[in-house]
Length: 479
Ligand SMILES: O=P(O)(O)OC[C@H](O)CO
Image (tube, rainbow, N blue to C red):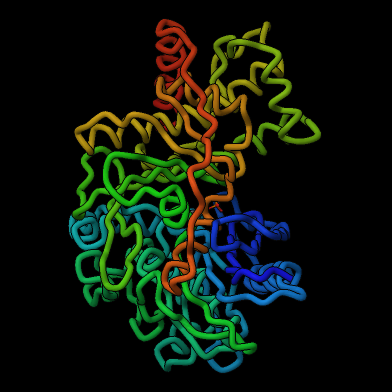
């Protein structure tokens, strides 16, 4: 038994549900993880089983909390994934349509054609792309039997994954979300922090279906055992907070299935370089704004290449990539779910270019790691252009940030130092801190040493890789 109060932080991601017990100094006392399987019923579609999401989260909570006192639960989650459930029974209605799913691609094209993009960006900070859930929710209402009628009769509830977990944790008593998650739905007006009636009408969605929007550090409710749920945050936002980035001038990249780069902007920022304006978090009514660039397939590019090359695991991919010092002209563009920021081409398709008879599997392995870094570089460059200032370095977290080889490639291609904190579970630590500070029990850790990867690649080699990359990106966009 630990004497200090412990926060139970959930990190519900695309491919794993994780739970951590975190002490007031930010130390991880216990952790548990369960894998999730994304299904692809049609090319470009991506779904998760809502019961599987709840079940895996429940199991990780039970595993880490056995025999411990938990002061509060804090939830961080994959964003932009949307689901529907029955208000009376709590049973899911249809699948969880996840952020990577492109099923609303045609509907997005129509909205663009009818000239709605400027209004949507003005209200939400988000451009039109299948990433965002408003059109996916409309798709569910239109395609699941009786769903629209039942929604209009008030029999259904909708929400992002945080809402679904909150509903289940509170035994169906609370239907709420936080401002960071709501800001990614394309239904929240970023200036008012409320669901927007014009957007709801445009997307044909009854506002009554949606959860109440609260501050990220609100007291959201209690579990049946009386444990307070005291923070909800989108995973990328929690990571930004976990890196201690709360003022402009620094940037972080979370390398998960996709990657998200975020920088705090102070006031609301408008991107002219393919990024999104978003809410970083809201606390005690104060809203912190950020610029974000989402990359659709990032760490997943390594998993994909591992499977294509028939390797045992991603460590084997990295070992193979390490056997060469260059890519031999091979470029991999992982547009496997379209291209996100800053290109936003949802119909782009993946490419492997530049192969010759001299190409070895190791070249493809190296190209896969470089692709992760190059996509991050594209967003980093857009971020500097939007901010009108150079960013001195980048802080990283997430599963793929554990790879020294990848972090060195990232430093080389960015031509900036890459800072990796000692604990890379920054998302969980960030949301735990949000709850811990709200409860007044957070002490924070003293200074810890980051591992810093310093650029070593010469300019000529960097320029060559970049020119091959831009040529391949153009090809992918034209698919
Ligand atoms: O599952 P992750 O950790 O890649 O996170 C997904 C993002 O939140 C999608 O925007």
